[in-house]
Length: 311
Length: 311
Image (cartoon, chains in turn green, red):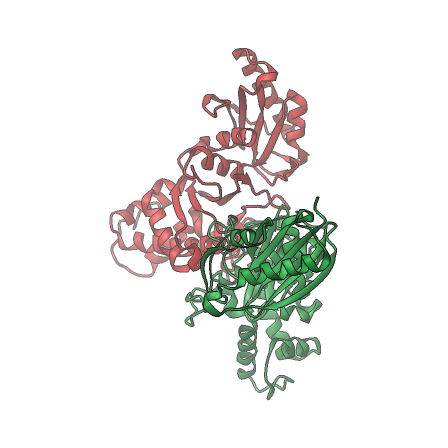
């Protein structure tokens, strides 16, 4: 009988783990450091040891644990096969099978962004919906897709890799992925800053953004305060991303877009501006797709891991 | 016990029906005219009568029929609710429920492009794959998506409506959908002809395309024969469509793209040129996604209908 499940979110610095009861309530969460030495070969053993310690501490028997759901920072196939994780030092391994062997528990896994999306669907910004796209805006642009309450893994583990859709074939600068003109080059933090710099350099109009170190927070704050350069930056950003979200709807037509990541702390101005341009470009049937902000923050991954088992 | 299933493909002019055995072999196919008078209110009754006649003719009992799968030329939700079909005169109706009532048989339905995609996956260009995108190139650009051997309906019945993704926000001309810059404006027949006309008007270079009525067939034929204007038209077309297919992969990462519709008669030059640009723009994990040509032609819809029941 399942009384508990574990959700694990492997990051490049720390591994977050959550113990959940069968009703999906978080009982306890904790972190261990990610040991990336020796090509990350200690990671699975460290996770297994951490989970076994917690089971001993709480007097939890193996029979009462439904399993472990795990998010991995790289492409993952539905079979559990990880196609390599640069951040962890992993090549191709079946991390789920290894963790299952080390713990004697059922293990399911997925790409971390997709698992986080599942968490937000279950207990976060997508609660009540079964078909959603989560967009994570930070140093990169990530995506996670949930259809019919299941993660869309993709045939090559690339489901939801929306940051690397090419939105400008005329771009001359290279993206980190080696292509040119990816969504991420314009809509992640550095791209938003570059847009603002270009606007500021085109005129001498006064702006609170002049003479300070630019980042997405100060730019969105300036826009909220009515600063013209800040507002223009937000409009250009929202036009680009809102248009691509409309194109996503022309493919999979989700019920809701959930916006997360550090930049999403900008709040309502972000979803309002995205929705405005989304509506402009979306096919008529999909014009009223919902928008919301992510709410689970760094816990989305462990919630999604638990959901992988409880689903 | 299921010995037979029916596949129905409702078009604006004719309704195609196929009788399949339980092994999925086509036993017989036939057509009846589509009666669009009186807001299409006779269509369901006509289909029911046609199927009952065939059952009587063949001595097929109701118990031996697994059901009817039906493609409808408009947005369809998984519940069977049709959100309106301009071509048929239909408003919002549950066509599947009405046909089930009229025949006493189980009925499943889907958008015609999605049902045709299911047929191509089952017995056509996508055979052996379970995650595919079908692109139909003709007077419009249609799309059908199959994930895990199931149709992706979309939350508003717009799953696979790829022809109305906006690829050029600077377009001034309106698409039939009222938006501006849709994929269909460039990659359907009229858009391909316009591209060739622009190329021909930009120089006096000799071309077999001068002084003749242009259509996609003569343009692709000219390209195959080495005509410079024909080749350039095909390159521009393939750059635009191949780039959008790469963006589809950044969302759902399918195993294969199957290219159908009248323009697909151009054959290998079409898939080769699309694949060339696809590879240029695709995220590294998805660069080797397969391309093939559709093979079932006008029968894809009835095969897909049968598959809806046998799946």
